[in-house]
Each structure stands twice: as structure tokens, then as C-alpha cells.
Length: 163
Image (cartoon, rainbow, N blue to C red; front, side, top):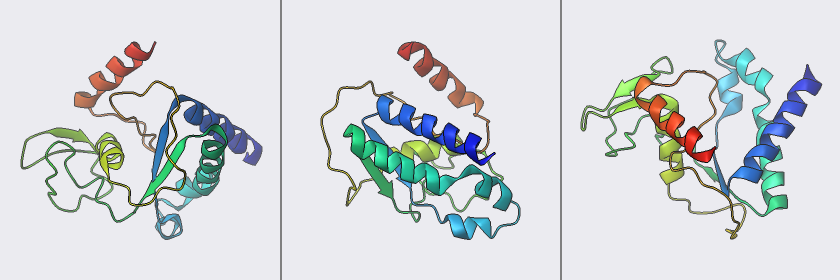
């Protein structure tokens, strides 16, 4: 199982680094998340630290920008359309509507947009000019393979445009 996971993480990190100029991750408190017995096995099995290490190394190798934002940014709580913070949302809340502007969000896609738009104070890798294709809508990998209906068309549109 370990070899399969390592092989998958190697292939995924290589694919992402080849496709994108900039890779931004959130500095998650993985050790704290593992203390949650509902998440512990899923998080441990994924090898998040290994994935981050592979991405950092390959970003440097391929001359890509690699950034990490603070775990304290309210990426899942803040509306990516208007910036309104409507309060803490439990992990079980996968979709929500902004109380301020009425925008409907998938939690993970909204977080990806907020992560992309978060100002970075310090970068790990200097910005370099590399010609690659950048998607208009960020795509975030998720533990949960669900996408909100309102966001499905954006992903489909992006997939067909890049084909």
C-alpha cells in the first residue's frame, strides 16, 4: 500500500508542477487534525506531508512558484465573491450560501479561490516566468469527491476549454 501511495503522490505532484506556474498550499495542522478520531485514518493514509515535500522539491526543480499560506486564513469561512465572513462552518457543511451576497459555494472550491487570492508575504520559491496554461477557475483536490451543482458547470467549462 505504501508503494502505491508513494507512486500516486509522485505522479500527481509531477503532473501538477508541469501544468501550473504557481502552486499554493495551506499550512494545515495535520498533527492536530489526526487527533480527531473521525479524520485520523483518512488523513494518515493520504500522506499529506509527503505530498507537500514532493511538491516543494519538484516546484524548485521545474522553476515553479511554491507558496504556503497560513492555516489561520478563513479560506472555507469567507465568501470568495464578496469577502463576507458568515461565521464558523463545521466540517460537515460542504455547501453554503453567503448571507451577504447570496452566492452559493462548494466549501472546497470556495477555499481554493480564497487560497489563490490570499496575499503572500513570503514565498518559498522566487517567482519565475514559465509558459504554461493557467485555468481561470482554481481547482482544489479534496478528500470529499463532491462538487456543488452551481460550481459543476465552471469545472466542466474549464475541462473542455483545456482540451
